[in-house]
Image (cartoon, rainbow, N blue to C red; front, side, top):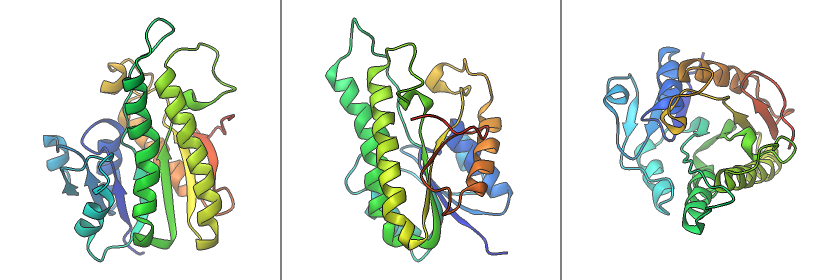
Length: 222
């Protein structure tokens, strides 16, 4: 069986780290991109690409240089941030930063790495059900919700545009995961989330491209 080349952003901790470790344990060739490598990532059997700020316009070219001639089979846009706005305080700068990291960067990286994708590659957007309009019954979190909704829109457009090239796209909500982003208050561990995400990625194909999934397999409403 062909060894998969997998590129993961935001791989220094949490879900990204677990995805990198699990894919490497399965025999994949993992390129783990991050701003600053954690010791846990360094200790993993992956190729670490540090110094990557996904919002940098040169990030895609830097990654291409690091990949050399390696074509990507699975691109996982995992890097993201969360700040907590509410009706009393919603600073524009915080909302803009979430747009830049959560929505614009994954799109620009995917476009910038398009020539590096194999003809049957898979592009994964780690999104959130908080970007769902139908599922929003609690309000708040303006920047995170808006940025993830924008990411979902970009993912669906990419699914349409890349389908003729045989490249499938998935929008995946990992669940409420015990990570630093939520002060480790989630329902499942990052390792469990990564395992479920890998299952969804394995099920992704050109027929179900553009789908918004929960990592447990449930199709989520827009």
